[in-house]
Amino acid sequence: MHTDVVLFSVLLWMVEVSGHKRTRGQSLQPYRHIRSFPLFSLSPIFKRSPDITKARATKSEQLLRIDDHDFTMRPGFGGPAVPVGVDVQVESLDAISEVDMDFTMTLYLRHYWKDDRLSFKSNTNQSMTFDGRLVKKIWVPDMFFVHSKKSFTHDTTTDNVMLRVYPDGKVLYSLRVTVTAMCSMDLSRFPLDTQTCSLEIESYAYTDDDLMLYWKEGNRSLNTDERISLSQFLIQEFHTTTKLAFYSSTGWYNRLYINFTLRRHIFFFLLQTYFPATLMVMLSWVSFWIDRRAVPARVPLGITTVLTMSTIITGVNASMPRVSYIKAVDVYLWISFVFVFLSVIEYAAVNYLSTLQERKERKLRDKLPCTCGIAHPGMMSDCYSEVDVNTTGNYGMPEENGMRRERMLVELAMETDQMTGHVGSRAYSSIWIDTHAIDKYSRVIFPGSYILFNIIYWSIYS
Image (tube, rainbow, N blue to C red; front, side, top):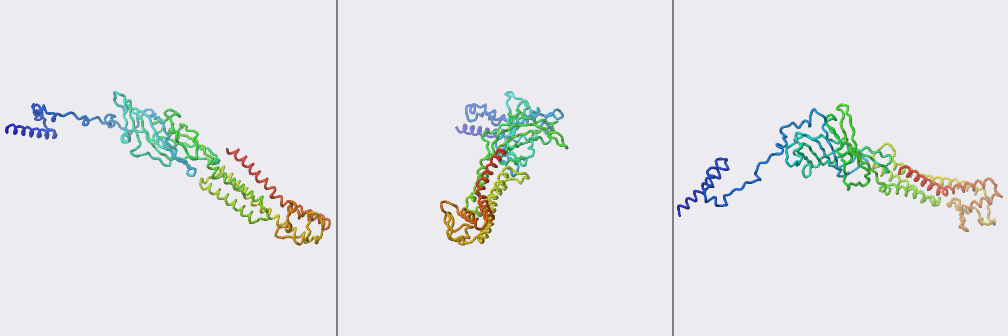
């Protein structure tokens, strides 16, 4: 019994020693000899199954033979130009700035070309997909955005770059980019304008002799997200074009254009600009119905409307670029300002003519004899010397049968024609009526002229 125990211990020691030898890369003959022993062949503990996760696979670099080629040169160097197809998926149109004359767009930019150096054998004809780490080891088109102010490739959580290689050497290279590019805008019809902007794609190093850029499927190469919307613009159209660009020092290059047309929404500017300006003009007309002797009422009303119009004009121009031409909104605001200003000038004219009338009235009273006791319908029963000077020629007598006091003064002057002379009294009554008619005519001329201006304005710019 003791002998069996010793023999079993020796066998275990031999198994342990043989295991250490295997890890060190030495001969496995003792282990194989022990496995043939019936005691261990019957025990499942000592059976080893192959681990497929530890099997050595072929690396992608070796499969694509990257180390066998010089990828600093384009495919087919020395031969015809490499055709590179492009398609774009516009993810969002983020911002459009009239002040900076630019726009910001996020898009998926995809390139298609064929590089025989990357072809590989495949029984299933399946492609291989890689991330941005392999892109740095092979040749890819050197695209850039013409007239771009800034751009970047998204890198959250990793670089948003994808490379797909097919067995015949065809390559798909895709990346997600946000670019801010220049857009020259014509604001002469602002805010009733329509703008056309373009994003231009071009190779930086390769001329059309080395690289031929083209839209892979024409206009169908440009796809947009249906959820794209802008607060101030309505996107009317997206389309593509292709042109040649010439640089005097380097040559001709293929250039791809992503063109989009935007029409500005007018409702915001109607609420913030046009309606307030129109209301200020209409408010200035209120002074035409206020008594011309109410100076504290009419003067502040005119000044308030003028200052408000100035504030509206300043606010609009503060959010606009300093262009050297007149915009449509400037035409409307400045003509509205002129109408408000003329309403103030109108009262200045009325007040000045009223002052002249008072002076002539005083001279006339000084020449008229006392008419006390004269009985005549509609005439005063007291002396003319009781005139209330502060009422600008209106006698201190209540209105009778709805007649205006100004009319009473005219009747007085006409009644004294027989005593004081014919010519002077007629001139006096004529001047009085003309002065009063300024407000009366303004009530019709100002609204009519402004309505006519609006009809012409909206028919031209709409």
